Length: 280
Ligand SMILES: NC(=O)c1ccc[n+]([C@@H]2O[C@H](COP(=O)([O-])OP(=O)(O)OC[C@H]3O[C@@H](n4cnc5c(N)ncnc54)[C@H](OP(=O)(O)O)[C@@H]3O)[C@@H](O)[C@H]2O)c1
Image 1 (cartoon, rainbow, N blue to C red):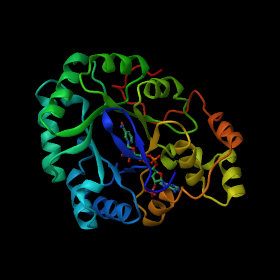
Image 2: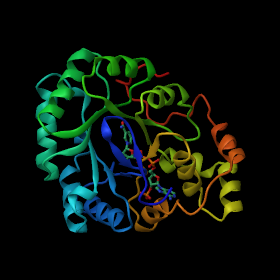
Image 3: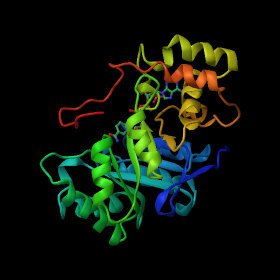
Image 4: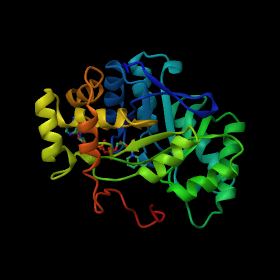
């Protein structure tokens, strides 16, 4: 695996194996961070309608000088806008804000119990047919709901973006992704870098010290060494932006991989909103 590596999944999609997360960056700080990420080699940017930073992401992309066709851009439709018509309008508005003709990947950000899944998946497919997105997918879909969405979708769903880090077991939904040749995109890949979080875990720290790497690099490497997993770490700090991309010069052995996976615990989830689906 190298900094230019891509993951090939269904629908002929080929996705850069690390993405740059942009929430909660905004305005100039966001534009600067996106340009810094592209300058150090990231070629995959993760944004969303809800982040209110798509304009800044577009500015950062143009400021970087990296050609549009070299950068994978993912955006997401907020869960309140996933009915037929609203979803397509949301996608088109995202393109305007980003200043691009098409995104590489359009995701339903969260499922919505008030909107039939068949309707939102049909609308997502329509957005693809209209050329708003090269590929489509979902986010925060637990395994059964993902299976249902896959059965309903005319075009392949190429990704499910979900929280994932060593404190959270996601083996069920990852297995569905792998079986269907989809990417499993890890959000909060660093457990949000919080106090007492995964970056401070003694196991992570011991491996990092032994390998002469940082805890974040060890955790990102753990993501990258799992089938179909693509982490999208966020940082607003140029040093950490570069640190998080500098993960191609070492690897974890099987024992360290297993040890990190064994840290999963029942209270490991960081993001649990009132409208969240029933998790696996
Ligand atoms: N689909 C969804 O529902 C959903 C939900 C949440 C997030 N996301 C996406 O996933 C991306 C990543 O998730 P996230 O931002 O919640 O969490 P994260 O990437 O796990 O963690 C980000 C936090 O870790 C810190 N950090 C970054 N690199 C570090 C390093 N090398 N060492 C120590 N601390 C470091 C950052 O601080 P500094 O900025 O100060 O470096 C920030 O506070 C988001 O930006 C967003 O694009 C999607």
